[in-house]
Length: 162
Image (cartoon, rainbow, N blue to C red; front, side, top):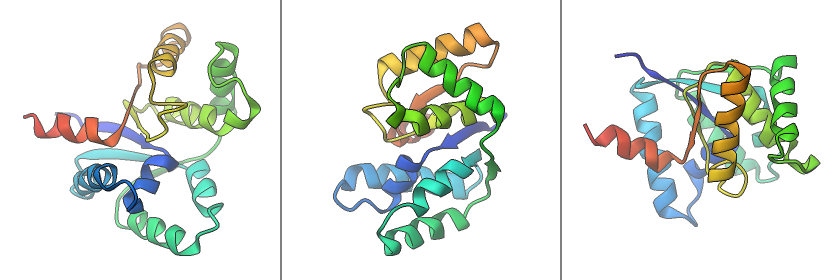
């Protein structure tokens, strides 16, 4: 069976060390365990690394980068195609504010990489019905493969359901 290709955004990686939300942290750690066992092909964008390093808490940044160093992944850059997809997201009245540019770029990077799933904990902007449906519509219109946007717990539960 072919492995799922998953794009992990900054919010999801942040939950590897989010002690104030123990259940969400537990779910992300369970997913990370599956990632360490090479159950998925993992994509992380250079945007994710930029956002991680922008965190003022150096100890947390080092902890999160330590987790990332333990897995196999492919890094994708911010390409003109990713920027184009980000503009399509905005054009389709999703994440229209300029402050959501990075959220749109995460979607663009995941499309360009040919991912099956975006793993995110960004419920306000990414993991919600409006964005999920809008992204699906863009993929159908533009000829990209469909991409699901889910929280880590949903992927872990799916894995455990076998």
